[in-house]
Image (tube, one colour):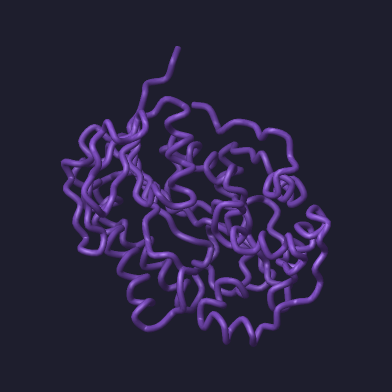
Length: 318
């Protein structure tokens, strides 16, 4: 029996994860509603299976009527953490874009009772700087700007939870992709032998390939009983020096000279915390629920990243 076609709304659908997720949903036959901050385009101007509706995240406004007939919302929108230096003004932008936007989504979901599944983005930065400590979804939150931002970001879903909606917080790690994110910036340097360790290189990166991240979101859309925090990371976090070493070896461009910590902090300001921080987070909830990774180990993940792996398996079916 063919499963029913579903409608999934996505905020941040033009971003790295959102665009890949939108494509995967349409490939499996779902309808997709992109929530955009501009005038929506007509259906005939959009790919098959896509519609658009407008919302105002920083004003915390989303008309609940927009979600009529929607089965799930994947809320990914927010100003980019690594887009610019963290001035006082930009820190305020980071908070406003995430917290007010999440409140708007949660309020609109709440108007539909418990019928809409909500997957709301967060980050493993929730745990703060934790060195080599093994972190699961039960680990407490840390300190610092990003940890506090993630805590408040997750709390902003309160109205949806109170209305009975099944809400999960996607605590994403570093997403490996050629098209953006940390690796989108590091990969061109690595191809020229310039991708050495950042700082000490001992900080743990909770990495996951974009391919597996999208599969995990598809899995969670079906597993409505999984609520609360979910670490969307691979099962084998590794020190950053090991990640760049594997990258250099597969590109045959080894780079061993580290970028000095002080230089990174001078160049990036507080944003260097995102690169130099260490979170060794494990995907306990996903694995306990039966999710399996196509790229569970670093070698396979980097082969996929640099394009030397054979055609990857498809996304999780229904």
